[in-house]
Length: 125
Length: 246
Image (cartoon, rainbow over all chains, first blue to last red; front, side, top):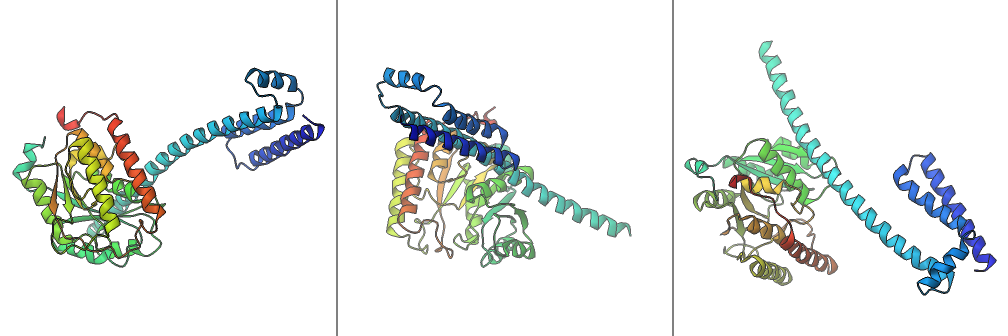
């Protein structure tokens, strides 16, 4: 890796960390999802420290260029991340569906009870 | 198969109408159903027009979704309401005037007389129905063939949403297995696998007055692909034991 590539990765890591921190501060991202992004930004920042290890891993699986190893890892990581978000989205949809249906049924019941109550009060008067 | 106790008297039926921006036609549909003595519930799927207001003016029960959830979820809300209110059967129909309210009784009578669990209104068996465009008819034939091939169920109009269902089917439809994002020919396969008796009866259908969700080229292609995939998934879905068989 060239020094320019190191700097680029560190800058990218810092930007990502700053962005995630801001999102956490503004309560725009849930803690459970933010942990993953903090880990990714820390990974970017520490790449220069553990470069020799990454080169060794790359050689083990037949990838000579560290940048190619980085893209390979990133592709797999993003693929798994998409899968995890698809699952989370499906669960969230089912929960929203249950809430919307329950609200509609309860709203109708409340209106019916309110009408009954109004009729009872009229009869009592 | 069918609870014989319920056959002694006419069934207590509810008409379910999922509606999204149906202000133009919904009032007339409700009036026609009330004239025949049916209870009507309209599920307003967060319409932007005054559908809800018109439904209330015409005296039907209104269930309002607080956000737009789609046709399948709206139907399922109706099923939940029917179970909660202890109805014995349900007729589901569209509120845009495509399904003739005059044929609701035909569906209920068929359900009662033939002692089946699900009756599908078939638009192709009746003279007077609108002519389905060729590409849509081809899609229907494809689903029909797949259904017959995988389940032995012979249904000529598997995409018809004009149906009458018994309580046992409703109880299955409110489960998590109900494919609420596109309840179409795929749900018929699940019904067959559950052992429900499904038949068709002729009904008149008119051309929908609204904008079709199957317009353009890619939408129908995507939809057909999804239904085929859903049919295949339905072959392997693990089904629960039927409550009425216990």
